[in-house]
Length: 169
Image 1: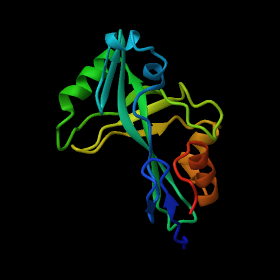
Image 2: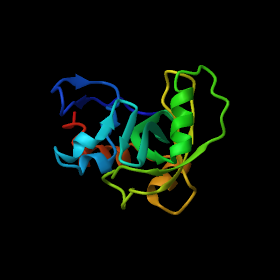
Image 3: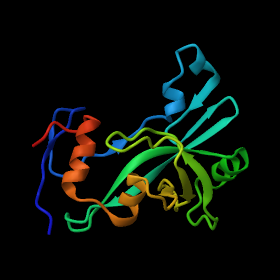
Image 4: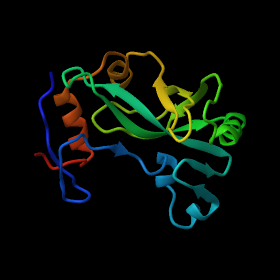
């Protein structure tokens, strides 16, 4: 059984009793553009287009083994083919998108793990308004292993701390 944790949010400064979110506002590729280059990109809360590249936002779930098997999700971006991107946009508000998973590439660096940029993923559409679930290819990469097997709360806390997601508590 998990123990209660509290966190001081590094963004709002308030104390919270639940797990903080860790979400990326944009794919890494967008964050690398300067102000002038960003004029050729389109970014919303769920979609990003940069030249010929297409990205969607999803959640990468990880079970916390020693915290009542609660699930923590990273809010990440993945690249999709132009065809799958357009198909997803067309199905975005569907309540029951009967669609096979889309292949994608993870497009964020998740601190606390070896390089996560360009890990292979499957993007599984969810009923609106939920974002798609991102499932990593089953490899020996520590993040893929964490998604398959779950992680301990202290491991998650170490990752969150590297992102400044909380100040302790």
